[in-house]
Image 1: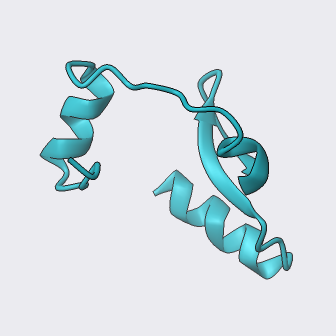
Image 2 (image 1 turned 180 degrees about the vertical axis):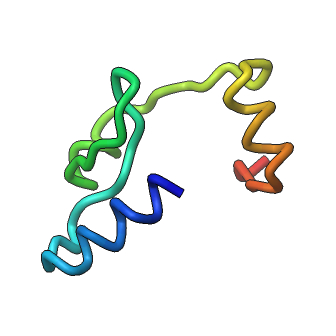
Image 3 (image 1 turned 135 degrees about the vertical axis):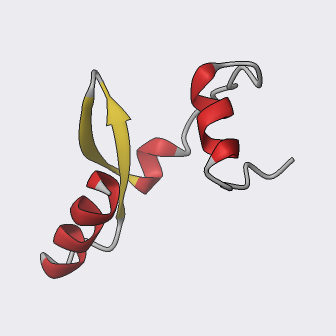
Length: 61
């Protein structure tokens, strides 16, 4: 997946303090510290949540 490729690129670059995210229709990386700085609620009925569950991704609920 695009996330996986980006994550491996980060590892190759030695950037272990970053995470892969989707922003403005693009795969990006952000500092983990910034990503967890503010709580962001996700609509459990959104199409992205539906897709994640269909792929077998656990969302912690």
